[in-house]
Image: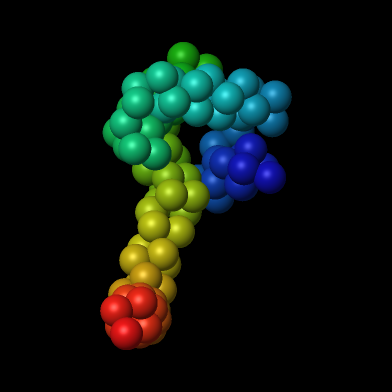
Length: 106
């Protein structure tokens, strides 16, 4: 599904690339992101993905734009949603923990 998302991002920019190339680039960029040991492969995935796009003949400005938009969709949108939901539910969780601690003390 993630390769399909990346391919759709390519199509939305009007770029043409083979789906098999997208799959290979996506897998290599993910491997580089994992090996970088950065949380979520931040930075390393975008740079490696853009560089691999360029190796496959995509112009540099377009490669960078596609890599950033794909990461905004795949990583940062989920991170933002998680932060919003965490802040919303944090009060409820803290209340449960406090009541549990108070029950232990009594």
